Length: 272
Image 1 (cartoon, one colour):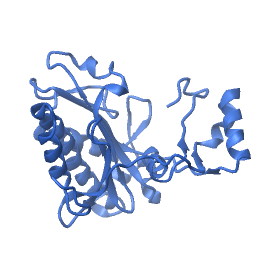
Image 2 (cartoon, rainbow, N blue to C red; image 1 turned 180 degrees about the horizontal axis):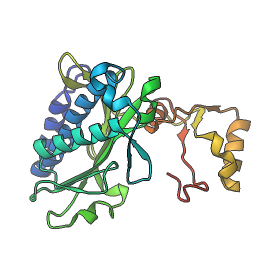
Image 3 (cartoon, helix red, strand yellow; image 1 turned 90 degrees about the vertical axis):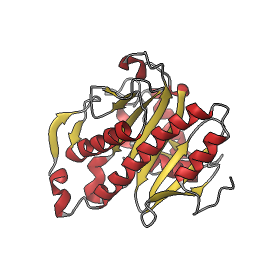
Image 4 (cartoon, rainbow, N blue to C red; image 1 turned 180 degrees about the vertical axis):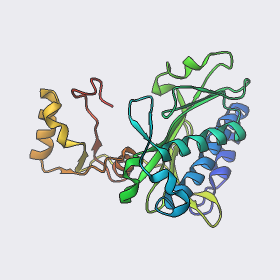
């Protein structure tokens, strides 16, 4: 299949990639998971873009009183995005396990499924009311159907079969690495077609960038080596850019170059 910018849809891209795979059956099952996440993200986009209007005001009235698995107080909109993702994965794929940052419980899916999906349904949601870009982060990992839910969390990142994120900003962009052989592609949500459409292929971070991204207010909490590194960034004339929504910062870094950091400090001994 010839990939055409602004024409080829995510569904067509996944289908062509699976057909070319050495294990087409397994690739299609993984593609179902990715497609289900994309469907959920299209729905989340609609909610995010109406966040200041009456029909979603209930989601924007502050915190919902609960805390997620990382100890962060949840926005009600996080909860809603979580439900959209779980529902899409249960109904639209054979995902074996579904693990969300917003829930301590791993959701059981299809007992015969060979993949698990892990995700943060709405990273940076505290920034929505000021119009800053937010996002969904996800990964798909192969599992043995007989393994328990704890198997989802013991796998290193290099075991991920597919990874990606969706940025909800001036446009809604899905950045995807479907497998190790296909590189990174970007798809933009076309609301008229109700589909993610290919807009970039073979995305790679530039070799040289003049921007570093970090919450420099945490400087006093860093160790000596970390402080020295960022002092050198400043001395070399690099520019500081930090949005505070990880997807927005990572997307800028991926396209324009530079570095993104969340180093260890007094609160997060291993970084974040």
